[in-house]
Image (cartoon, rainbow, N blue to C red; front, side):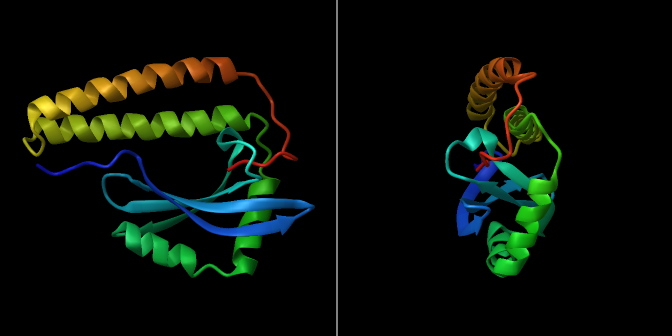
Length: 160
């Protein structure tokens, strides 16, 4: 039976960039969107995952290794440019944004499991258990989203 990885299949530390007196961890997160693997570069000062700032540029690949290769090929100047772009983003509700991104990833995963189960690619019992588990995670996440709604964070405390 094929195994479906959850939405965030891997996270890789690419670099630590100093900027404005803050050392930003630069991480690559890879998701499978049902067609290809897509990498997003995230920046954090290491204080909390919930305040991580994503770069809006994507790194697509046929495999996670393809995405890793693209990310590792980014120069420090290119990573600095991506950090500048992420910092210039005017979002104020960073924690909420992070949670909504996570919510969408889990919904995509839920759909991927359901479609695979209905098409016979996954064992019905195992897939049904995975659906129940993902549903419980979604309920927990929605509670966190409600608590984060309307809460502003300052960019001076970067995300992961």
